Image (tube, rainbow, N blue to C red):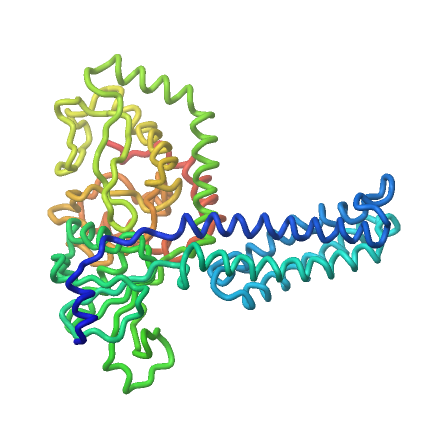
Length: 464
């Protein structure tokens, strides 16, 4: 191992901070610049063709065309990835995506003009000149955004990390943070909540993680990396002799891609917007229920209105979940060490009602606004929760893979009826299967369907 590589391992860096927020601002700036470029292009077309930036009286041709084409272009460009990592890294690739979206938007605009029978009111020359101007404007924006992103984000627009676990390191790019798993006490063979949290804290905001480890620890690292929302790869130099046609590469050496991160950045933005809109609307609409329940809990038994408990969230990081208190304050189980049973003496009369109707879960709408949870996702569990006599991760090693996404107030397992106590291993395995299906096949349409289906299962017999 070279001296430089040894020094990088000796000086363990702090957990890297994610570049997602900076990328989001750049993406929004890119959309705004594109819209201004297109608007300016059609205003200029008005001036060149009609002699006035605003067009003819009662016929603002270029502005009308932009009003139709602009939103269509924005939707197509977002969907095609024109505002993804490619926009920030490679101007030519980004420009190609933008121009493809623009051509599609132009064709749809022509179709709308034809179907609306307003072709006679639109100057064809203005349309043509505005489109040509827009092409140059969009390309110029792409090169400008690439230059700006390199100043803000550096040469690599996402955070990448290399984890060394007792093997000789390859040549590692200077931009990658390097950590020594053994010096930090990260042991992937220990599949427990404390180790998952330690790995998540060490990885920090990294979105791409590469691990170099002995071959006998590959399976354990594969399980550990699946708990992260990052893309995870394991370096396997011995695979080089097989010349595999699939897999990944790192510094020209083959890797096994064991975790892809269930959602790309665009999907995370869509899911977050969905969460914020739905949670805000629900808080407003359900405010009478929230206030009435809070008063009922406070007036019928001594203690706090809210029950707070540590749960495992995205990347297996713990967070504090909110629920209306349904148990007597002195008997509350903050560690989830004892399963709730039918006619449980710890539960108050009001608590029994709000648990049966799922009203006790409503404060989690504020967890969604905080960003700890989603409206839809795998339900969050306490670290000490058990299925029969075993901790959840002891029942099935795949358990950690459900933490690669934010937990939800409701989820696929819940609408399928897999909820309530986990008296047997099968109770956990049934909901785990649904959770894994959800994280590997996410779509906003599916979230909407699950949310609508939740209404039918708000009241259930297994809510003790």
